[in-house]
Length: 256
Image (tube, rainbow, N blue to C red; front, side, top):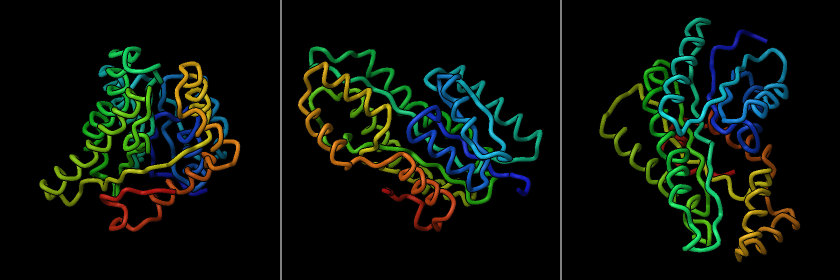
């Protein structure tokens, strides 16, 4: 394999869509930076990548400003050392616990969900902007959620924060257009739909314990095969990042 110069940073790369996307990108010859809180899970993703493609693990909590600063510094030092560049930034990480109704909704959980799902994508996009501006046709992909537009009982912290992420995407689009900078990265929002991941299974178990009504829909969707496989979604995301014309990517809301 030829020397790899382009890298993608994927948050939430320890499982689910993030892990599948890391594998898909590496298969296509893109180096990957695996970001997440669980070191062991990240190393499992690293072990599943094809041989010969450079990748490194970055176990950090992107909700913490000091962790983000350390991440940016270590990534840039490593890439500069090897003459490589950051071309793709994927904001995939997402958290938010189900709650048994309004009175059980925890403000601290909403605060944490906003920190991971909204504040971190803003901060990391800002902090990596100098690197992205140096890469030709750099792209930033925000991973949304359908529940942001379809409120369900007990899904407040995740749904509210994902709605805020979509609004952040719209805001950055407006700000980027106003700046009229030719070398800024293109932005897109990716809506994966229902995906059969460990995270979805965990959500379903927690929602069932809270007696939430949407568990019936999820049970049926999973049993009838309506949920997509993470690998299917990852292929669509990789196509958008690597192969889609920038005029189609920029400002778009994309789906598998």
